[in-house]
Structures are given as C-alpha cells and as structure tokens.
Length: 207
Ligand SMILES: C[S@@+](CC[C@H](N)C(=O)[O-])C[C@H]1O[C@@H](n2cnc3c(N)ncnc32)[C@H](O)[C@@H]1O
Image (cartoon, rainbow, N blue to C red; front, side, top):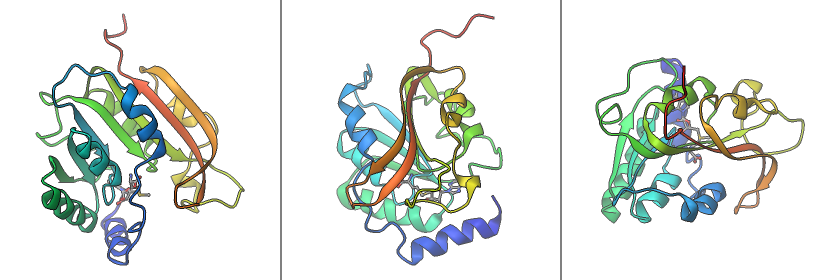
C-alpha cells in the first residue's frame, strides 16, 4: 500500500466513513462467549481496526486490545473513545502490506489470545499472524467475497476473496468454523462474506 492509499483512508474517515457502523461484528459477538483462554485479562489484536467497533467491544468485555490500522485519523478517533471510557486499547499506526517487522508492543513476548481481521483482505498476513498468537490462540477473520450480487463492500476484486480462498490461507491452523454467504448486518446492509475461526495448534506440527 502506498502513501497515497494511506491518505485515501484518512480522507474517507475525515469524510465520515463508517461512522454509523458502531455495532460489533456479529461473528465476533457469536464466538466471544465460546472462546477459551486461561488468561485473567486476555489480549487481543485487531488488524485493520478502522474506527475500532470491534476493539471497543472486546475492551468493554474486559479484554486488553492492540488496535492496528494505517489510518491515523481512524486511530485518533478510536484512541479518544477509549480514553473517554478508560478502556485498555493501545493504538498502533502501521502499514500491514509492506512486510515491516512487528513493533515491540505487538511482537514476541506479548502473544495474543485472539487476533481479528474483519472486512480487510490481506491473505499473506494470516500466516504471519500465527506467530503473534499463543498456542491455542484464535484468529477470527471475515472477508468480502468476489460476487456479482448487489452487496456492500469494496468494488475491486483485489479487495475480495474467491470461494475457499480465506480457508486455504489458514494453512497451519486448526479450523473451528468456516462459512461463506450473504450476511445481513444490523444496519440492514447485505454483505457477501467468507468468515472463519481458526486456532494456532497447541503443539507445533512435526517435521
Ligand atoms: C473496511 S475497513 C474495516 C475496518 C474494521 N476492521 C471493521 O470491520 O470495522 C478496512 C480498514 O483497513 C485499513 N487498511 C487498509 N489498508 C491497510 C494497510 N495496508 N495497513 C493497515 N490497515 C489498512 C483501512 O484504513 C480501514 O480502516
């Protein structure tokens, strides 16, 4: 992603993009009570968090969250909300597409119980994310599918996945749940999504 792409997202957020989308992901809400962690204050990382609807939801449930996005405008909004509610959310500005190493706050030594990557398509990142998770840690991901249907989401195929593509990208994880199809959001908009919950294996694969 180029500098101008970052400006594009900043401009979108300045213009009010997603301001009304305050509900957390239905997939996250569904799985939250079923996730198993042995940590008193579990840690989550929200990749491409945007305005942070899911980070805020997790933090309000008692999780400590690292929220990552390329847009400083979105992160400033999230940081202000987190501060107003005294929620433990650390905001990190980072381009997730240029292969730069993880900053200290995110990297080894501070492994997460959960990573989420919602409505942001970056398939190579899925493999990199495994090292950020504790053994048994979860990855919840949701991506728009390539479709001819009249649905919400990005127009270009570059930001969408083909059938089965999200699942195939989770090589080396244990698959817990996988679905594809039209989902109706609480705001009434319809999206054609691939949705997945996987887990880092408790023991490394042999060989
Ligand atoms: C459709 S929004 C999804 C936001 C959030 N995950 C949600 O579900 O509400 C996509 C997000 O990806 C972020 N993004 C796009 N390219 C990125 C990159 N290269 N690195 C980090 N974030 C990026 C954008 O700034 C935007 O906030």
